[in-house]
Structure formats: structure tokens, C-alpha cells
Length: 100
Image (cartoon, rainbow, N blue to C red; front, side, top):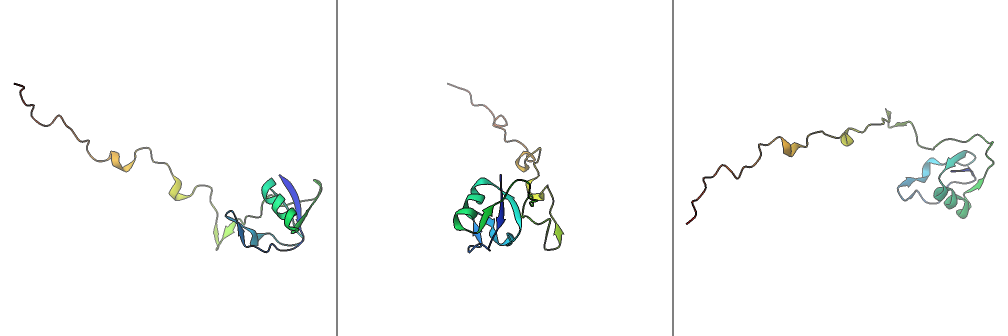
């Protein structure tokens, strides 16, 4: 993790799925090495010392008035998949043919 101070707004809106519009000039952030390297190389930010207060992340706690949850409803693991509800196919329900 690297601490940066954003000097000016990024010229791109998004990089690798990360929304860059949430980083505001004059604020301190603690970001990953790759994102920090991008901000420093583009001149959007400068490194700060470790004693400066920084935001843990720039991700908001609320999106469109709804709080973010840790467990999305579409990612709940089912113990029994839906295909297990059907009766199993049986090959033994046919009569055996007698060999010659």
C-alpha cells in the first residue's frame, strides 16, 4: 500500500474497472501499488509520508441511497444445487435382456 495526495483529477474516468472519478484533488488516499504508480507516473498525485492521515479507500459506504452489504444476494452458496431436486435417472428400471 502506498499513500498519495491527489494533485489534480485524473483525465480518465476508469482504469481496469476502478472508477477514478472518486479521487478528489487535495485529499490523501491509501491505494495499492499499481494504482499508486499510475497516479504518480501520470502526475495526478504525489507521495506523502506515512504520518499524514489518509482515507482507507475511496469507495463510498452508500450507493444511490442504499448501504453496501458484505453479502451480495447473488453470491450465496447453495448446499444442494437445483439439479439435485429432480429424481435421479435410473438405468436399472428397464428389463434385462437375456443373452444368447
